[in-house]
Image (cartoon, rainbow, N blue to C red; front, side):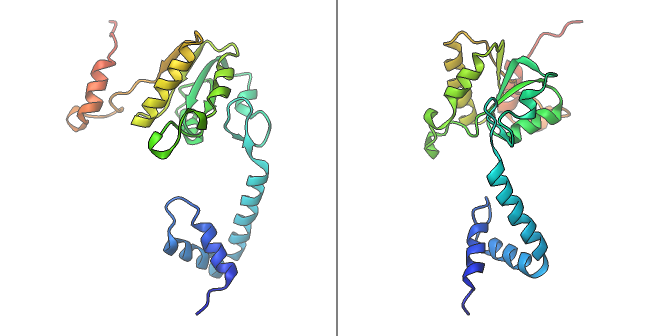
Length: 199
């Protein structure tokens, strides 16, 4: 049986999503066509609108519909603090934690030589310009992976050479964590990053 070319094109398009192989794409396509045609149209229209309207904020590099996003325009945020994160999802987690009220810069990735991502593939020149705009401290909140640590080290060297104060978020034990269940690397880092308790 020959599959209609439009259906093949739909399946091929669905495969661009992470974790979606041929079988998953086929199931999704058949589901949308058989059970939810209005959902398929809504999805197509939403994707087309998003691709047309969404770009990068000129200040923080996060996704936005405006030239400057609402976070960067907010007068309630501390304009002297700049938190650098890898991805928009990391920014959302920081906001959900309600532990930070400064500005952001989203790298849209991290240094990863094995994946062919070097310093020229990240907007480090824009970050440097942003950090020089009356920023008192840059907080590096990249992930605690080999790539995230390498990215943090590279950025801290770049910014420190410009005389910009740089800090890195701490790592350690999770809230509610028990020592016997924590891996040795996390425990060792928690001991190294211990702080003085005042009575």
